[in-house]
Image 1 (cartoon, rainbow, N blue to C red):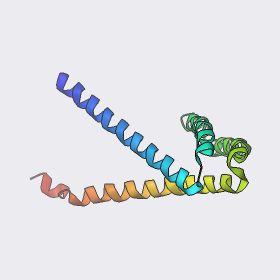
Image 2 (image 1 turned 90 degrees about the vertical axis):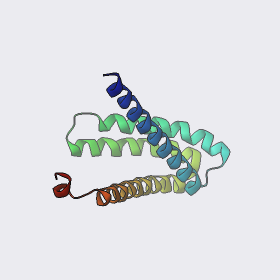
Image 3 (image 1 turned 120 degrees about the vertical axis):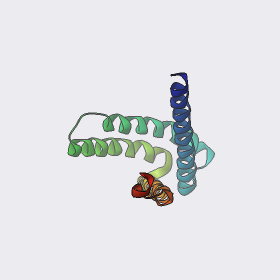
Length: 129
């Protein structure tokens, strides 16, 4: 029992470390792509954290998919003016584009990694022997 609970703790810590690494990569990517200076970054990231919390709260709600998308779009529109006051309209538009680009690249990387792991595994037919 102790062994199983320690495995669960190790797995949770590993997932937490991965999430922290992905978050650090995201911050570095967005900061670089938007060319945020120190002052902008100090103002942008706390606002972004609020933005992210609101978006995540939508995803956990038990809503039909279309309503989730509408709610997400509303949050993005609400934050557009707030982001624009810090980084301007053009870079705010770039932010939304780069955010989607990062997430798309992350999904592709995870899928490629997962497919690579699956090709290294023996065929199910032979594992049963």
